[in-house]
Figure 1 (cartoon, helix red, strand yellow):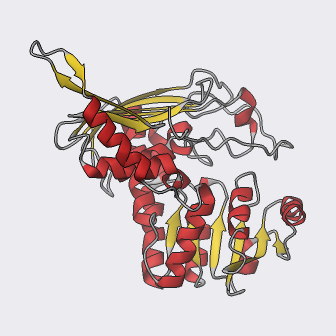
Figure 2 (figure 1 turned 60 degrees about the horizontal axis):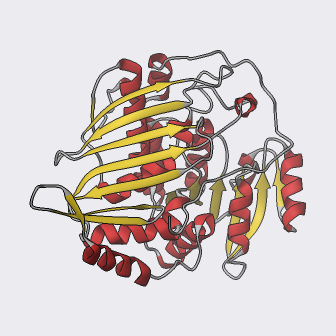
Length: 385
């Protein structure tokens, strides 16, 4: 029976707690920690947990915790992760992995040195449409991918950035490019690998109480010449999110849709119904996951600990996603095209370098400790569109 601690009991912690409770025969939540202990007490009561509540996570470092879920703001992810890895715990940390690539490297080094597992939350990989899309891409039926389109569309009200740690480069680390599109970028990297060149723009068009961007658009070039685009936003009504891949033979996407074309003698398109059916049949035959979202990733991490095998999403994966994000920030901040990979001597490798080089769109004008309404949206992909 693995002993689990939840560090940070804000809104997203409910997804972790609920996930662990699905596997009561494999793990037990023994501790909750929050800077505001009353929040942890509320979670303990809500879920009926027999768990210790503490204000300072360091009180748990000598408790023999097997696995820790870190659900805190990004600016403290590295410190807390490294402390628990050094104490002998495995760690699952919420997205984004950290506030800088320098911190990511320190976290990975600590995991390797201590022989412990480090996993970064990317729960959208564990959804049926994403898993199935990955399998269809890997089948090659769509052909070589020529263009990728990622729409990370979210909507957040003006007061969203009033929360004390949000809306600043120092504490939140960025806007939707870092904190919302991170899931879609993880999926894109998983499916297509790392691009070689980035050109990006960003702005703050609707949240004058935040230093960070609320909208960015990035253009990607891959080593084989194919192109991609990523829009990261908290100004899009409807929160419609999608990943679209245009292959040589067909277009496939999440939410799921397939369209295939062949050329008529004059070069104009004609529907390739046979290929569409072949791809649809493959998609429909793929099995559904036994769990989805956070619960599925928790299952994967528990299994990795139990069997000694790597988790699907490790620290290297989390770092790769942050590298893409920092490349977008660098291009949007400097107006230059950015080559990947980013090197340790790059200003955007460190948190201090990022803070010195990004634009500060507005001064944070409000600060509240907590919201009474803890309901949040985490995005989803419909099974078929």
